[in-house]
Length: 290
Length: 257
Image (cartoon, rainbow over all chains, first blue to last red; front, side, top):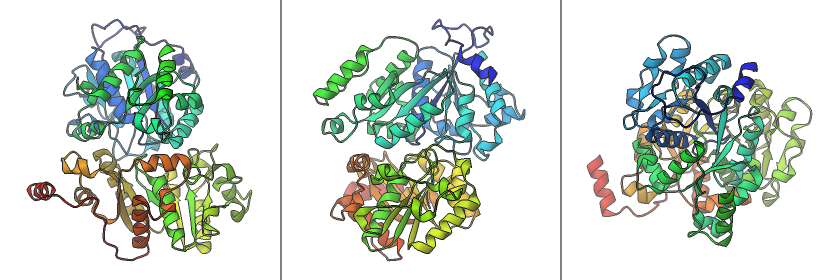
């Protein structure tokens, strides 16, 4: 706990590109947990896409699948056939960390650290997870941790090594409620940022979906991104190709912009108001001014 | 119990709608929200303001089971909700306690539908403890099916009879080969099919408003849930064709097969 409090005060590293994966200890990377409470809102998809966007910007990125027993990040990245070891093997010293890391097919500066599929979340000790993430931070500029759904042991283990958090929600009452609950359960100092995923501007305009402004009013978190709902994401996920590597994809562009914001760039929040009504435009305008 | 492994595939929506569909048929139904700490079934049913006691308080003997049950007034005395605690965690209740509560509820109602939390941790083990039969909800996506398969394995270890509902299918994407078909999913999971529910934007809105679509049988989704309820009761009901299979679809099926 003391270690984690100390870690929470470490600022994310500078945006200077690094020469080498081996860094001086003072240049620790940023470990960011992607969480939501509710399942199926896009944690894994967001982890893969933001990771790929950061790697495409030249960052060294490690994606950690913390969903022991129900892993999916490997599938979303199209790496499921290349998984040899998993992070529990590393913790239990059955293999070296390097041997468990699966290099991405498309972006060379990104690797995946898979979860064990046939083990239980209770098999992972929180202290071991914290040590593993600390080790990864020495080697990578970004360590993105894909948290399992829920707030049980898997959540606690995913959160323990992180200094920052991204909360993913969809504009639905149940997802926003669960997100709000998770914000309350996060350790102090993680400064969560929000991704509103699967927005359908047409439904917002017809009053059938919460707007970004309405979500913001409940959660009151800095917006990292607004991702429109597109069937292409389902297709890309099934194929194992992150949309953020697709230059012409609208959702891909939204994820690339979220990645820029994660690096501290001032990028205007997406304005989908051409498809929405006056209030949506207003919300986008207000969002963009922050 | 209604379960899935992966979250967000429609467990809670399915539980609520199936409960309404069974209650419409005159059955007495209790819905149990087993998602302690992240409850949502109350919202989907529009009963969130009426919660007084919850599952954990019943388990701890701090209130009678009857006094924790919330009556859904839209169904006279046929549909009840046993809400989850919101500010406790899943460890607050044991498998033995859930089993005892479920058994007591089974004595009071024709159906007890248990809305399982996502994942396969303690919350899953609690939900499964009192169940006699499982409904696995999945969407036609690789990640959801993989998680469902994992859950099916866990249910198999307990010899639990299990059927599958395929949720949020988009016939247009299936047709273009961008989404797995019902047959593909059934082949992977090797489970009896209980229902197929198309992706419909009405669900988002009705869920946000706490008015399950199955309240009215006249809607497209309402009639689909009504059929699933009939199948659950042992009737043989033909599956609604989401769209008449076009020539190309049949050709694709033939080529893929």
